[in-house]
Length: 79
Image (cartoon, rainbow, N blue to C red; front, side, top):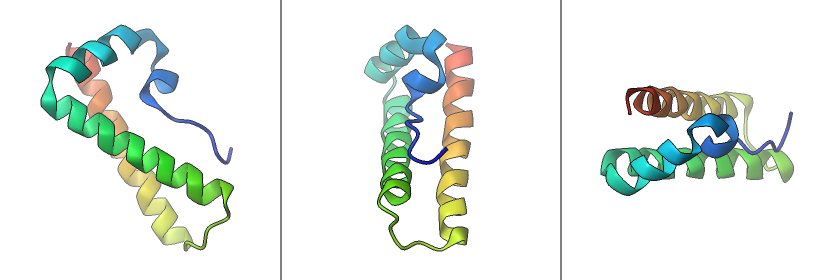
């Protein structure tokens, strides 16, 4: 669905407290969350505003977001 918010707290509601704790205590996690959020906002903006972007570029943005999401999820599980 276009324009969905894929923020970490929406994607992993069971980990809200862990997300906040890691964001405050783990600089690497915080940097990855920031990049993930930036990618999510960019994708949402492009989808909602029908911005000109080719399919391959959009696919790459979504792939990058998914890779970061997997990495962040592994960090959440390990915490």
